[in-house]
Image (cartoon, rainbow, N blue to C red; front, side):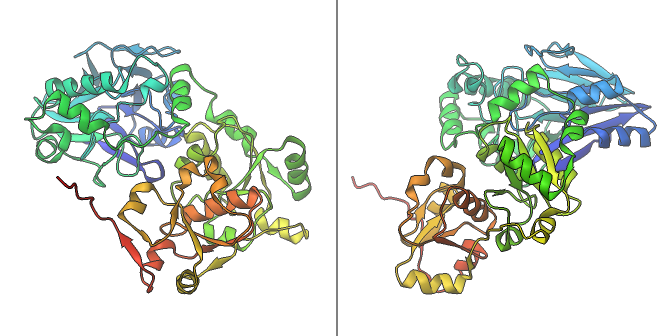
Length: 470
């Protein structure tokens, strides 16, 4: 049995495509659905079903557009209540895709409608399980997201459901089944996912902390809930879009893919006060950018940081991109529900500078110069995650994680110089652009970040586990 995993690294997401005997199915598709349609046409197949493992929080699924364009049926597991036409399957209900069989296994816990799909080949042999956010490689789905939409679904209740689903529905299955999860390392839907994106169920039973056979429900709930960071603010909004429906990507592209010359761009920026989002790489942005623009580069976890740092999902956005990256920027915004881009700067930043318009820049220093300044008592702000900072950091540095920067701007001084850094420079440039927009101009950024700093003579403090005195 052939299962095509279609992995998108910027949001650590895996969709799946299967085809047999002229029929195809797609599981948890992304917002841009044409690649699935093209794949089916290449195979001479018709997409019959769009299977959804649950109502996703970290991205807007392409189920509606894909169903509309192919006449495929959307399928959810038990208890789902979508605001559009769909099949709400029963536990153990089976669907045929050519000679393949897909069996619905209701596995509530991440959400109440969460469902695993058991894949069987043309001979009835069980091949694998598409687990959504029920089971990851090395982890399981966090149970604290649904309560942001339905208050009664506490994380403790959902964790208890997940324990039962894993023990009663997943672990009894054959060890040789292949596990196909919805996410890999980097996703905020779990806390310790592996970089591997498939594995056998047997190996997961041996290595996944959540599948220990001697684990009590109370132990499971405690371990699962310990160490969970706060979910990104856009998650509940994406859930509602996936439940209620959304505008087609085609309409969004028609509205957003609008080239604006410098004069028109400036006019729109001044009149409607949209967010100016610059998606160029950090090192390019630092050399020059339009005043008041925010940098979130396409070359890393773009969609995730958009969701973390732009609080209003309906925020109007003007784009500044590298040449040819306009469409990709719009699509990546739409993946997390930011559907209100209203145009982009035609000719990019070069067109802006060619007219003599005002520009700004971020001063940057090398790791070696950082070492010189730190020895003279320079103030340092590290915008990495708390866990990264706890593991290892520059002695005396202050930790203000990028995800929380908008709530902690008062921590940054305006009356004395300071230095910013992250791990490699991507996040600190986002922080730099935010501070520049808010009026700070008394700081520098470190090229190469902490990865470069570690190679100097700067004193780095390693994490030391505290000792309890009895």
